[in-house]
Length: 255
Image (cartoon, rainbow, N blue to C red; front, side, top):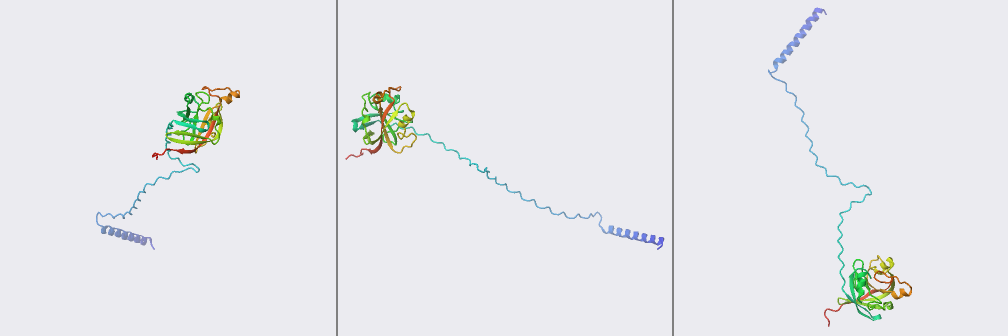
């Protein structure tokens, strides 16, 4: 093909393309802008989650659970003052010996002053015993030589002898089961005498008992033991231990 012919064809193709372009522009309305393709719909936002419940408390393995709040322990009720009583020991002729209760312990100054009046003394309260017929140790002390010596013959009371205590119209009968000796120079010996169960400090009592006590002055003096405490008591005391066997209350409707 000659160069001239090729030039004519190129000019013809350019003219054809120009005509096609002009035709397309004429077909479109004036001011028309092709619409943008629709946007894809946005996905819906997920609902907000509900607030999570608080996790249970963790506990270290082997750790003890926290204790509950302690309930206050009520204060113990004050000890009621026992009634005065009358003491009978038929085997040695003691009849209606007055027994005066006082708050204290055996043969302390207050108890000794009571005994100096010629009657028996019975300590009660925190450091003493209980009342007649009560569970525990009903302690009764009286002089053997001075102030009329109301318990001068107490060493002669034997196992099986009866002791009667009358208080508030009720009579409590005890039976003697043992004789003990207490040393005022031994804290252990005094604790045994004053224990709720005679001879067994710390043991919980389950029955009513009695301790009748008087000085062992003749026996100590005979042995050359002239020791005395601040109240003039010798070192040793003779104790008779009994257990409650009967309680008798008068009928409210005699006859």
